[in-house]
Image (cartoon, rainbow, N blue to C red; front, side, top):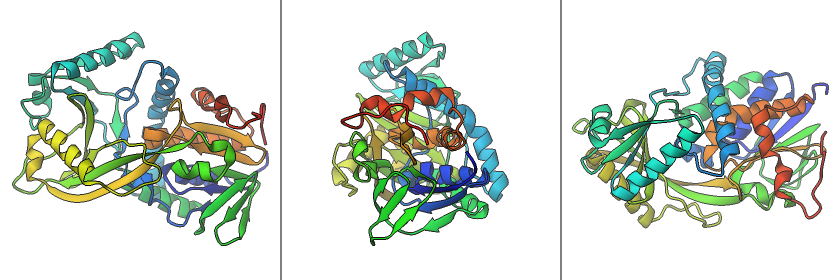
Length: 377
């Protein structure tokens, strides 16, 4: 296709990545969002961890995640070149830890599953875990080292994407979309935005914008931000993902002694209030893994809405003529942002997207009562 106008609905990590890359490719791009960077992407942990998220039966998601992970070093370098800033990419890897025998058995199952796919992690005793991360407490009995997994500072990435998009000529449209049909966006004030192609990237809010996206649902997650005080032990160097008597927890380090702690997971509609129980549970389990956080400052409590789908794969592809969808990334928005942007660029240019993205075809879920087939521009 010839280069034309593109309107991206949604200013999270997916929408901003798509807008920036489309603008650098020569498209005239507008980004429609009343407050870019203020949704779930702002409270994310920033883990780029397809291996530690692996689950039997989700091999397509693992393939997509590993392909996305390979994009990240170049994506981060491109961002830095565009802005001169730092997206906070960390390459130290991830340590998975467990406390009791049931947790150990779960880690063993994950290790066996990954080994069967050719990605055997290194098994660790509790003592070996503490040799890697001295702050981890004595209740931790076992672990796995996943050296390939990465992480980023989510807020640094959002800031760099916003600046890179501005420099590339992305036009900000500070309106709230209420409906998207084809290549037209209707805003809350009654006005419309038209483009040659609309890219719908509204995360957990997507279902309210187009009837075919009813399968996308909000999944609430609460996140705490901590900071090591001068009298406290420093945060771990690696991301620590823990099972605490079967309950998942993660601790993701940030520059300057910061630590992101998450994440609860609820089916609670569009509720974004932080609950006392959520904060209590997060701190209780994290302190058993990293006892030193009792001396940390509690800086922020927040909740975000992950866009879930029935099979945990995102929806990336043509939904109808003039409309591309890029949503449903659930826990993997930051991980999948670079490959999602590349896939959308390919679709805009009438090229096939990267092969692992084909599993994310939105029509696999029969999103409409009369599913479309062979949809293109």
